[in-house]
Length: 219
Image (cartoon, rainbow, N blue to C red):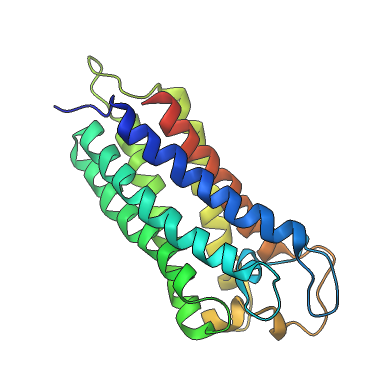
């Protein structure tokens, strides 16, 4: 079985994750909304950073996500090679779909809300499946060949809960909404100071970043 011990795979993981962080950090720092408001993790969707004509650094966000998804693709494949198990390859299959969703989010910003919503929801749903199966791959490792310490699975659990909460919240509302409505801030007459759905989206972001860094560190 081939283990992902070469520095090449680690570089893909670190660079890809770093690109995601840069893609959101700089646009958030220079952001000025339609009402002149500063960006807030508590009530702005991540994708608003890529809204052309509103976000000052939309090009940076969209290009950054596009490149990050492409760079993370070989790392996700490397994880499957490293685990060398059926569960690991299921995680890789979902992970490939997830990172391609990230690429698509960069191609289709919020200005094209219908295609953007498809890309974003593809990422969130596939991301949930990815951390689930990789979590199982960690849980059911052969005792004689421990690739990742079981305690590291706390990162998988945190990410899984964040994805699950984000995807479940709209379904808990009485009224049914299309994904385009759910992810459209303009559908809310007045932006709340603390808005649960964007805040949960940021929980997904931070838990996923922690998960990727954790996998790079432990494998």
